[in-house]
Image (cartoon, rainbow, N blue to C red; front, side):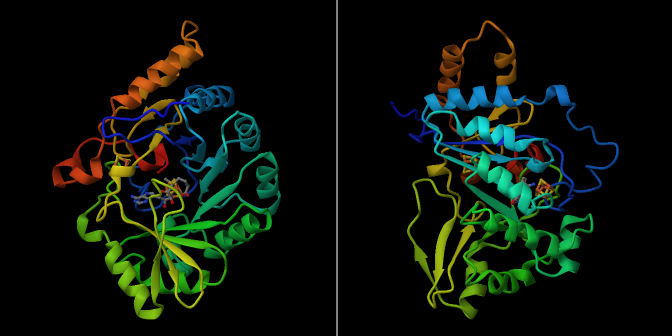
Length: 338
Ligand code: SAM
Ligand code: SF4
Ligand code: SF4
């Protein structure tokens, strides 16, 4: 099958499906309470793509060379019977890897096993601190650390690994937690990934001063434990990988702000109501749901439309980032899923 490439010769490889815009957390860097409060209008159910529509979409994308799918949100485990969707997707020919990013709140051993049996291969669980005080200040709904550590154990128990943990680092909020988090996950088999705080959306009040650059994160870690770089696992991998020289395992750093990786960006993202974004920092998206719900569009025609969408793609937001781009209208992280 010929690879579809965009205007910068980047192939289309990964599809990220945001299955809901709702979340039970209000992480300060993603869904600040002041904006996502009681009066916020989330999508009504009939606007969400159904499992069949999502499966059809994945089938069409697999014809264009997509092999990896990641389920995200909002909080994907808020979507009922998610295992049914995973099973449907795992039956699509050509799809080799199905992963999920979750805050872990609803992940216990039973649910983790159900998802694994349905065909989920890996999970990434978000956790930003190891002390309750800091973690509660980040999630802003009072969830303690222990709840998420049990989710990580459940994921390991179910074989959803190697389990990754995402830690978004925000200056003066949780940067003091870099060492405690690293210490906790060393020798555990869990891959901790430090993520630079990004200017996704328009609601989190992002300021460059709040970003702890990857170089600083690395220097903090190196003072405690010498690290050495590792080769990427696959082309287009966004995390830079390192291993502890003393055999303590592996970490990753995602430096989207200070070391943009647009040159290798091979991802397309689908919002819960079926809009496709060729960049995390897009604003409008392409209305795929409209095509999916109109009978006159068959799979081959939709495939052509999607191929054209990717071929026209020129996005490289992070390479061009400036104060002006930061305040331009952008889709929210909790809508598109990271
Ligand atoms: N709710 C799930 C979770 O938190 O894992 C999945 C969706 S969440 C939007 C996906 C990832 O994006 C999480 O790891 C989260 O920490 C990260 N994230 C959210 N806002 C971010 C921001 N402003 N900068 C960097 N990463 C962010
Ligand atoms: Fe919810 Fe994930 Fe955003 Fe936190 S990062 S508010 S858990 S969607
Ligand atoms: Fe890809 Fe856009 Fe991020 Fe660049 S800014 S890596 S094009 S999603």
